[in-house]
Length: 80
Image (cartoon, one colour):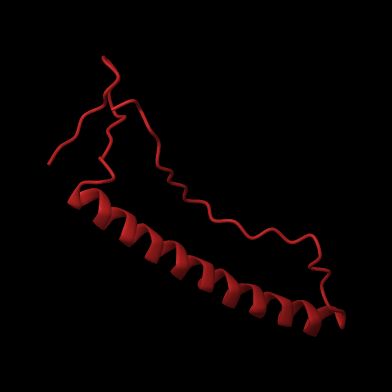
């Protein structure tokens, strides 16, 4: 299915009804990908902290560390 933008004359801003089969499948896949990326960041962070300690002999201060994904998706109510 090809869902088009509900905003007239706006190209490239397509949408997918979240309650559709396609929307539900997309959400399931997106959540899997975000969980995978989260665990991947944890592994990379652990390796990075080990290297910091090996090189400097000090533990990194992680009290202000930020853990956020760079791909973002949100559900919106566009009045439909």
